Length: 284
Image 1: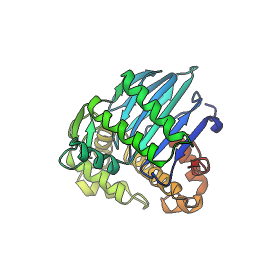
Image 2: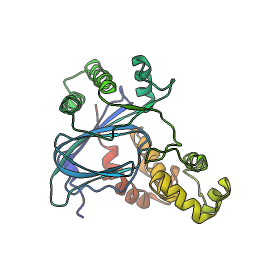
Image 3: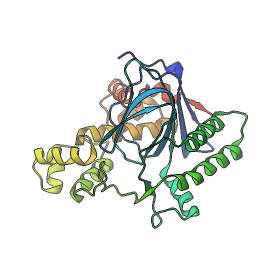
Image 4: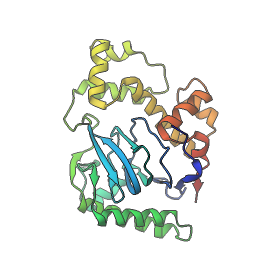
């Protein structure tokens, strides 16, 4: 597949609002993502064209008017339908910021982030509201008060429009059923040691499983192998470091990649943009 034209991709972020980021893609027909997850709450609109959307073990077809909803750590994949256009916005929100808002709304889960049960919506009110929010965030003529007011207003409405399914628990499978707590321990270990050389023997010994059983159980739980999960953790940590303005070569080494070239290849596979393009995104 041809590389995406980065002139048709735009990132918005503001140092005054570090808890939110917007990605706008005007032509995504060549954008291709491997399955991955985010440590943010993510919600997006399909503004035109068609795509496939895999989340929580199910594949959905999306089109103009669709809204996709991703809880933190939801393993997912979104890709254009072959030969079709794909125009979309994606909003990434820090779950701690959103938890604080949920507490204000009395919509939290005992002081923790309340996940959403919906993975896809075609509600026109929700769709129009998210489009308006994205336009407001990207508008240089709107000051910080206007942007933050729009953000709080939208997410206040969101908690009325969508169902919630309880506390954010990393011991919840992609399919929604509680998985073996041992796999939660493995996931936690990988997240804590993502920059190190982790061996499969280490992970198997952690929970007392054979290597083959561990790989099968982990993939069933998280939707990806332990190695793919490790790489995803490294890319997500790298994304935050690039947002902070750290040098690409330093980020590559600090997040466990062999060198800058390897980091660039992996980052592009999961983020559909290069580290340099991401780092140079507009900062208001």
